[in-house]
Image 1 (cartoon, rainbow, N blue to C red):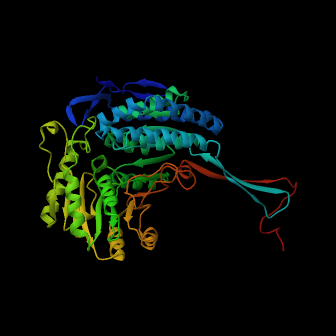
Image 2: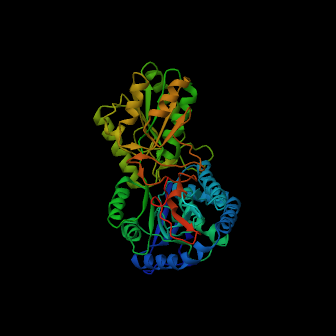
Length: 498
């Protein structure tokens, strides 16, 4: 069944002004059309921004606990439709069903977490230095947010942004990836069913190069949250800096797992497989580098080779599938080109390295899980984000060398270390230059109650998720209030004589 997806503006599901549509396909079998969606243009953006502006004034005045009740209901609706939505994620994005269901579960978790934050929208009250005067800070919304999201977590990432934004009292326009319009629509449908007032959340479909920058720089938008490629994110940062508009960007990664010679190697092996090949390597937190102590390098590479070759490549809806397709032909070609670059650079191709030739993969975008050995830290495959099922094994001489290798890239999102030595892991968590560090776990597995964000070229602005120090710091801003009930002019610092 082909889904007919529409834009959602001012509480109504409508076609694009142009009347034109585009389609999303199942990347496991491109003969299957999953959905049609509106090909929006600038006129549609204008309509959505106007609707969000109109809705904001009433929404910001609704008490935050009442806003939270709507999110609780949305979470409950998502629970009831979890299986259906998870299967849709797998069909439209390609990740295996267990991961598709996990994608939806993240949205559920975030709905309940941010709903609770409605009763913790706190500032602080402090003592004044003058008599008969009090001082406090409160959190207030920015206004209208533009939210631009990728295809790799088509339910979870929009939920991260939408739920945090609206609990703080903002209204939003969501522009999801054109690869996954149906998944975004399913999330917005849950909010509509939960009783969200018209115009608080608006949904626009269409290519980013046509409407993305226009939306982000629109005069009616107050702030922007972006998750996607470094190139697009850095262009947005430059454009929005010129107009002094708050922006948070979550971009790429070149994440690494350190495996020390005292590690539990079976546990480390599981972590590397999950980090490298989960979601077919299409995560910003994917473990595309494994930094292995020289004493165990050859033996661990052999272990990894054997385990990688046992992974089953195929349609994510099949129970025995371990690794699904990549999202598109463009991405497939990019990954295969990087594999060629790795071979030309002198890395040893241990296993994989090509588009799958399996009969059951003939109509999809499948790349064999690929392992490179004898990789130097300066090779392009070791420094540039590939965003596919490709992992590089790099040798190190000791912990200091391992940490230096991990840090010697432009990215700083996630890193992990496997070691039984508590002192080694303590040094690693202190010295690794990444926003997230895992001890004896893979680079994948962030939980929504803590902030999620990277350093260096992995992102800028406040991180996603979490409460204090995370999303709420970005989606709200601080207003400071001084109340003087002395009945006379009091001058801080001047009248406060010792």
